[in-house]
Length: 183
Image (tube, rainbow, N blue to C red; front, side, top):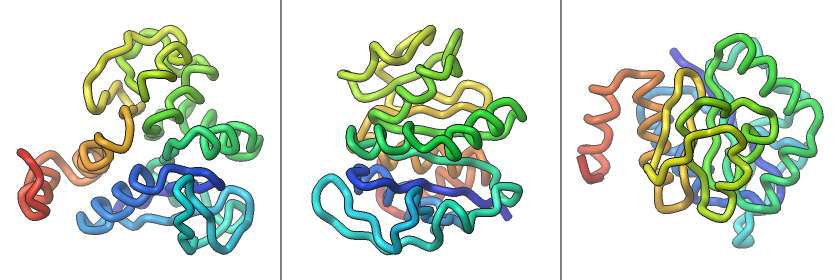
C-alpha cells in the first residue's frame, strides 16, 4: 500500500491540503498529516484548526512514496523556510521519488530548479516563480515524478492525480465517479 505525507504549516490553504488527504484516503492510500513545526494542531489561512497525525520529527521518510506541499502564501513561506523539509524534498527529487505541490507551493520547486524543462502550473500570481518551467494553465501537471496544480479550485483534480499515480488511473476514475466529480 502506498503512503504519502502532506505537510502543514500555519497559514496553509485548507481545501488544498484536505482534499488530497480525503481523496487519497478514500482510495486506500495511507496519508500522514504532518505538522512541519511540531504543533499538535495547525491553523489554516481561513482560521480552520486541523489536528495532525504526527510532527516532522516523528515522520519516517523511508516509508513515504510521495511528499505533498499544500499552498497558501503564508503556509508556503513557512514550508520553504523549514530546512529539514527542504532537504527531504531535495532527496526525494534526487532519488526519483514523487513530490507534489499546489497553488503557491510549486514556487518552492521553481526556486530549487526542480521545474527546469518541465510542464508545471501554480496559482497565477506565483507563475513567475516556476523558474525554467513551461508554465501551463492546466489544472494539474505531471512531469515524471513532479506533480503541480493551480489552487483551491483544482484541489480535487490534484488529489485524483496523486491517486492515479499511486493507485492507477482506473482507481482514480472510479473515485471521481464515486464522489460525483466530473469525469
